[in-house]
Amino acid sequence: MVKVNYKINSEIPDNLKNRITAKPIQTNYLYNGDDFIFETLHSLRREVNAGTLSLKDGDLLVVSEKFVSTSQGNFVDENKSKPKLGAYFCYYWSKYIWGYMLGPLLKTRPDRVLNLRKMPERETLKHKQVVIDNVGFIYALKPASEGGIDLTNVPGTYASLLPTNPKETMDKLYDAIKKEFDVDLTIMLIDTDATYKFYKWYVTALPYATEGIISGIGVFGYILGKIGNLLNLGGLYGATPLTITGNNFYKKYSMELLLYIANLADTSQVPYTKSIHDLMKKYNTYVITEKILSDMEHSPIVLVKIDE
Image: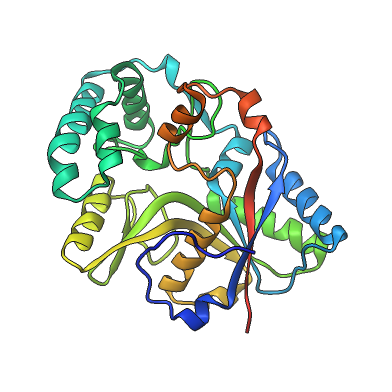
């Protein structure tokens, strides 16, 4: 069991945090189009049979969006992208405006600012065009992690889009687990891209999020979060719950608690790499092969328990 391993904004009292634990569950590497529900059931069954995991009504199973997107084959080959004028604008905007002006002004971490200043032109142009084509221009204006389109832990020159039909897909997982184990879990689908608090509102730069989080506003969600942090009106709250389904016990939880759970699960997963730059430094390439990925340890599902 693990605890959240870096500081985020949170109004959760320590006595409650101490009752929350997360167990990452290792799975096989999922190839494009593999069935994530089958792999989830297989991995849970292995842990339950080994006596290393118990399931009870109301436990939360937190699922990585990449795990689901891979199963759906929701990939785009960025090498086939043909950059247009908008992509060039967003590239120079990210590299120079964010890299030299907005990034430092909004107190973006120095290593991330440096990554912006060093971003490669060819790859970034293609990536920005993919973002524009799939989620829109207001997402491509974000300096990185645009619209939930992910380059981390994805093979070759592919980018992973967010899952399609997230609520219906998680409903199917919930039904399969209930049938297999006769247990009524809460299922939470999350994305590493952050949720922020600005005054009394929770905002994200993602195209969609669970009820109670303002989404669909692109780069403005990111800017509001940064301003909230600067003015001490909120700030970073960690990973974003995209949808929650199953056992309704979670509805008595505050948004702060749900965000704490999402972030705890996110930081529990292996491999814990936050960006393509992490992988580039480790493997000295932006192109990650399926061989590299299959050799890694993967735990895209995390069981979270709250002791009553």
